Image (cartoon, rainbow, N blue to C red):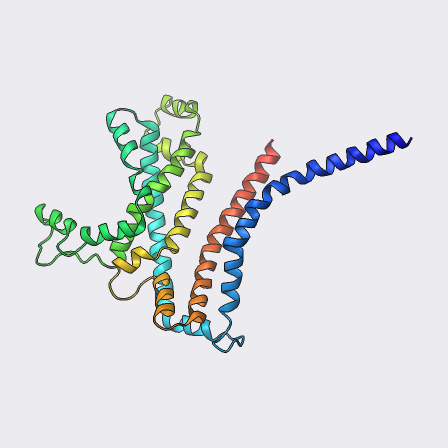
Amino acid sequence: MEHGESGGRAATFTERWRGGLPFLLLMPAVGLMVVLYLYPFTASMYRSFLDKQGTLTFANYVKAWDLYLRDIFFSLGVTVLSTAISVVLSIALAAYLRLRTGRVHRLIALIYRIPIFIPFVVVAQMMNTFLAPHGLLNIFLAQLGLIDLSAPLRMFNWQGLTFAFVWKQTAFTTLIVLGGFEMVDNSYIEAARSIGANLLRIIVRILVPMSVTSIAVGAILVFTSTMGTFTLPFMIVAGEPTTVTVDIAHRVNYFGDYGVANALGTITYLMVLVAAIYYLRYALRRSIYATEEG
């Protein structure tokens, strides 16, 4: 009897150990998330409610709202526009790489990844040269007779910033979207072709619906990284409005105002958090649906 009881206790201990093993394996990743993301977010949010005397107040948010409301909407607008254009271009490029073969296909597959490995500060310097009033873009357009160099395009604004973000982020988004497209079985594509579906219908009716998760992941990652980028807007945008990241740097470097800087940072966190929550809810619904179907 005692032997049976000890064996039962050993089995119970083994079952508990195995049941807790997944949580143990997750601890390093969870700990890293807490240290690098949760703690900074919590500390920044808490300090955003403190004035220079350490008193709790909403004054920092009032000041941020009064001084930087235009920049907040500017940041959100440029980020949404850049993300949308990057996603559309990445879908088109990924579809081409998925459905076509040949020398041009191999050349594009080799070249399109290059922007991923170029740092933002290098991209900013490149765009300063490319988008300048007498830079490469205006010279090229003048050679085509589309503009006059005496009245060149002024691109050191939201247009140039959006162009720079799209050039940098499209390659990264394409890499993720192409991974989703590669997972679509060829039988679906061949079946669509057999009934006369053209390239656009194959993309819209088959590749995109079956790769929504990959497209959503790419869009969320591009949105968050674009919202938090400092170098590009700092080096490209001349004058106002500018992005919140530049405003945060100015509040700290020129005014030593960490309260307003933390308030602006918290506002940026919340804008990014909305996109993250939307994706998590969508992924959870798909997971529940897949479990029920299974």
